[in-house]
Amino acid sequence: MNHKYLFATISFGFLFNLSMAQNTYIHAGKFVDVRENRLLDTMTIIIDEDIILAVEKGFIKGNPGDKVIDLRRYTVMPGLMDMHVHIESQTSPNQFAERMTSNEADIAYNAAGYAETTLMSGFTTVRDLGGSGVNISLKHAIAAGKVVGPRIYTAGKSIAPTGGHADPTNGLKRSMMGDPGPTDGVINGESDSRKAVRHQVKLGADLIKITATGGVLSVARDGSAPQFQQDEINAVIQTAKDFGIHVAAHAHGDEGMKRAIAGGIHSIEHGTMMSEATMQLMISQNTWYVPTITAGMSAAAYARIPGYYHPLVKAKAETIGAQIQTTFEKAYQRGVKIAFGTDAGVFPHGENYREFIYMTEVGMPNLEAIQTATLRGAELLGLVDKVGVLEAGMWADIIAVDGNPEMDIQVMKEVVFVMKSGRIYKNEP
Image (tube, rainbow, N blue to C red; front, side):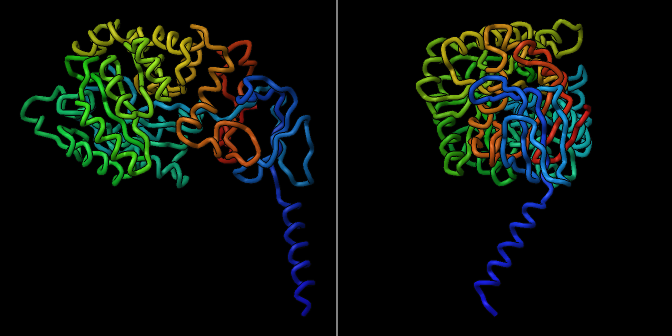
């Protein structure tokens, strides 16, 4: 047989099959270009399975058999990315008591519901910053198609010192406290720091989170003082770096932020009492800021409801919560690098869109706020070649909203279409 002819025949057959393969054509009335922060009109996104093939001007018709999705009345943009959620839990006046009564199975069932709610609100990728470890199993279940939810990158269990914000025994009676250690995410000293990181990586964590200062919602006295010595922070970050993963730092007080930044932290979460000197330090060190304004505003509001929080939590929520929006305004004006994050779980999952409202209230333009939840989130995760923009070669994570977000950011609540990795999960039009 003529092998040259055989190769030509196979090549022709491959090209013929490729031309006949069914693609999806999305006709977008308005299209958010998150690189340039502008709205384009009348665009078509062409998708092959889970990958974007092309983005073209005009409403392009495909071949017979291709699928067309009509979003000509809507605004289309990349799937949103929330860089700070707690997918296992949700705020409740009984939250502290539920820690004593919830089994892993209970947490998992609840988390599956929260994950689906998050995806249906337009968030196709999230960074989960601390839970019991169920978050790691949920990540795998979603990736395997067993559960509906966003793509999850998770820290597993947060790491704290004894009595710190993420010590799981805070508030318990003494007979139940015990002495949790590195495998529980509780450390004291450099050796513990390394072991705790290695253990979370062993369990399947994608990144590490430390509680660099006290926190608002833990049943512990202080909400802002530093909680790690510098050698402990350095050990956590260096060990994580050896594994090729990032470290995020929960931090309300300024000194804890400075220690974390000095150690090479990748992102500061909350940043409530951040000084201008620390803002400048973050700029010089290329450190990300994830504001979580919605969590602060929500905690302050819940603190006004009698009996909603434990008395220790109530006092901190009243004094710390509402400050975050002002800090965000100053950090944005100064030029700190910002990625969208909400702390969802501190407030009901599915209300993540509120962060856009709080960001734009103090001066960030609407489309730039959307950029923080798309392109900037991808940059923080190191996934700029996969997600965050609608361009050829990217994963087909696409949403649509009913309205013009450049004119009215409130429309981010009205998500009518959700596609993740080329699969449609919501199509209300």
